[in-house]
Image 1: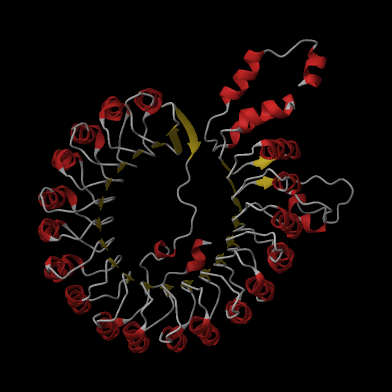
Image 2: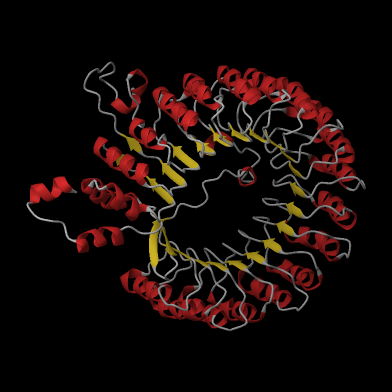
Length: 640
């Protein structure tokens, strides 16, 4: 500050300082706020900078090229932001300028950092090593990090006592050498890391030896995500299992989806299941395990010491041959709560065998995934029998099946049975039409446990939605979340939906994305949303053909509705006028909305009722359950 004042020959006023502070939003989430950081960097007055940044707890940016000057500014502000808990940087390039040596002149410098004295994130890591740093969560996804970057990150792990989550996914240049350096920091007694993401980092089997050493010593690491390292292979997992079997290992979740595993490593994994007292979640989907591999795994699952609660075996090329072993495991294992077998050709015989295990009194499975096109009407009959007898099953995913309306009719009686405890059912892309909606409405009106129904990507049309609403209007209906995205309906049925919104005492979330509601349909929905008895909290309207004409009605909803906390209207041409009207509603003192997702931006309200914008990118956390598309020829590598 003094330097600036000397150069200008005058004092910087209090008003200018106040303006700089007011320019910084409470939730920064876009790289263009780096300009405000530049102001703080130029001022160089420590107390003033700390005061300006004291409210900042989260910072996120994506798809930016950071020059060396940008990095200095970012590092300076992170260093002086003592309340920052989450720093998320996605698909950014940190330009590295080293004029002393140029060993790979044909490549961009940021791809050659392994040969440099300093990495591109050196300045950022320096800021993370200061004693006052409170950062808990750091993501550097797809940032072209190098081996040398891992050396600097290891130094952060050795010194920073607050960092509990580090995600370095989609940095393919890290490789085994980078992980070796990183592990030196992970093994340090000061390291408190609980979650580590190294997905799609170009790892081979050799890196697993170093990671195994970490598992034997770390008292904090509980989650390790290694998915999409296609060269990891059986040899890598065998090395990793040596660490997992160690009595000091605290790991609870391990992700090995699409790591080129075969049955050869399943004996080692089975041994882990029978010995580890910590491991509760294992994802080995997208690997060619086959029947022999699952048979070995089941030996571990049946062991009385097995503590596993969630097992993902989607797209593992399983057939009916392994289902008897799985059924046997379900009869004896008392800990397994979630089982995903999506994308496997189990056949009618396999499903029948599996259902025998599910009907066993001791079976404790609560969530079952069977997404795929191999389910037949006969198989649904067996599953229906399970629903009337199993007292633990609460979630069932049957998405991407081809049995159509007949399938709903087969499940109909079971879903109405008083013994059915199902709370969530997913019927996404099951070739359903309006013909099944009367049966579904009857279920909604009688079932006392069902709270979530997902019918997305089915051709229900207006008539189907109207029939469905007949069940939603029943006093006994307990549905809290209804997903009807891309169900081919229009504004014609919105009057019926509006009546549901105005009266339902249970419905909290409604997704009607990618249906041609138009402004007329939106106006009808707003009539229901304005009613004092409306309890809806989340409404998704992405891609519904809205224009600025509907924004006045939506703005009124924002000022009157006392329950709505999240509204998503992405990808519609609302124009400047529409955006202004929505912001007017959002800034109203009576508005209860917390997040408005608007054309790629999340506009969040702070404690004063003012909105601030941030880039919205959805959930970055990996969810294996959403991985499978329903195609039997699905290749996980297509999603890298």
